[in-house]
Image (tube, rainbow, N blue to C red; front, side, top):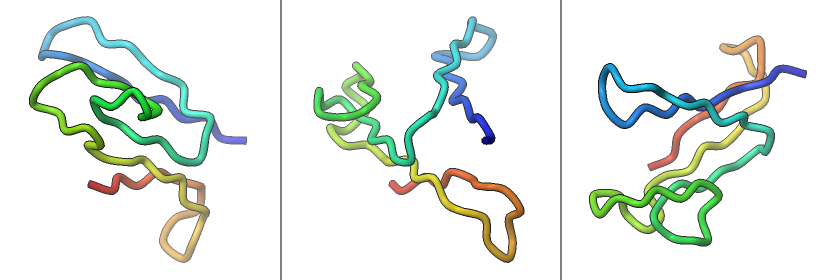
Length: 68
């Protein structure tokens, strides 16, 4: 199985961290109900979602899309 990571960097030239993605859907935002919580007033309660898609005619491997 292919593994995926989300690399998070708060600013250019800062140390980044990686979050292993093992679920098929993630919600990102300020809400504690989100899978990934971001504490920043510029981020909405439900900012976006990452959704794992299966291979298709254009993609040989599974891939994530971002829904905003």
